[in-house]
Image (tube, rainbow, N blue to C red):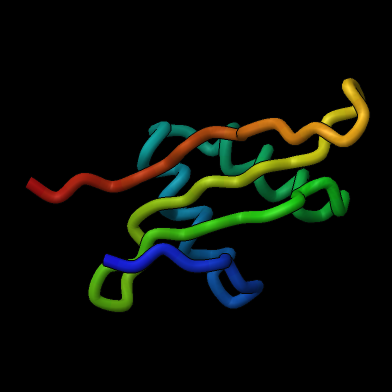
Length: 79
């Protein structure tokens, strides 16, 4: 497993992971909205054998100035 920066090409896979992790699209919609607004500061994915299996995103907060907020942490478990 590797952790790396998310690319634009990963976004569909990230959406699938977030929806699977939360069993609804609301959190995936939040991630997409933060990315579209430019408020996403950095986004990381976990990749296993070429598949996106995890996601984490930090976004800008309005206050306190210069701080970041952690969005949902999403991952798929394989047992």
